[in-house]
Amino acid sequence: MAAAKLDEFERIARFFAPLAAPEALELLDDVALIEGPPGQQYVLKTDAIVEGIHFFPNDPADQVAQKLLRVNLSDLAAKGAVPVGYLLTTSLPREREEEWLERFAAGLARDQAEFGIGLLGGDSVATVGPVTLSVAAIGRVGTGRAVLRSGAKPGDDIFVSGSLGDGALGLRVLQGDLAELSEADRAYLVDRYRLPRPRLTLGQRLAGIATAMMDISDGLVADLGHICTASRVGAVVQAAQLPLSDAAAAAIRATPALFAAALGGGDDYELLFTAPPASASALARLAEETGVAVTRIGSIVGEPPNVRVLDAKGEPMEVRSAGYRHF
Image 1 (cartoon, helix red, strand yellow):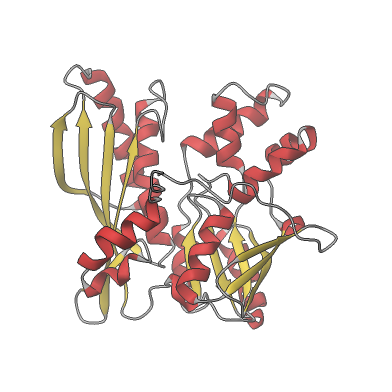
Image 2: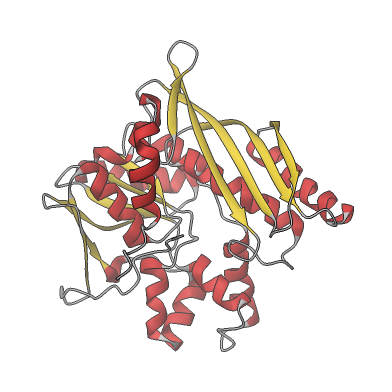
């Protein structure tokens, strides 16, 4: 009988965690922290996207570039960091036309202007496989102020920014589903899938308030599980409190099973964080000042690391897919 294949995180733990430098935070936090100028640390992050997995071959090249950059900036936001710059690696077929590259570069230029960063270097190689694109983003944060995954404590509340499920539902639209939605709702969901909103200002303001934080890339339940593992706590999520956009709510009204997108769909790139109950008024002010909704969705409990989801009646819900796994 063949042995079960290792999943993504088991691979990391077995093969790469033993190689990690102290600054890599045991490879549990998706970033590294290295010392910078006095009173500052640099936050290092890298993410790749692959054609056919993270974006479609016919997606606009400028939006592909923006998604690539923004998924990395979202991780900087989750540490409370200010972006400094990025390195870019492109692995493209030799026949890739210059027009595509021109649009790709234009997308990067727009986001560089919006987020106040610049390209620092990188690499460009040819491939016979699908387009593969990678960014290594660099941010800066005050020494000791980076918000890690490991600080959640029993009694903390759990919060998310923005709304959940939009990215996963946008992917469904691009796959030809959700035809019952209005054209405006379908366009909104596709936009949320293709163009994540890195919550940089909110993340920076949460430093000193949030006890643990990360962004939601693979799915709420899976990513909250990472916080629980790093913090050695449990979590209880109230499903009825999950924030939904009007477009997502319309999709779920038509097909209730689509609520799974809010629990484990991934591609939201919203901030997921914990904070003491006493911070509620400060968080309300932050939401108003930044224009980004902040919603309490549950609480941290002193249990072994796991995530329980309760329905509106307080009964446990089955979560068939907690989030996306690469392997």
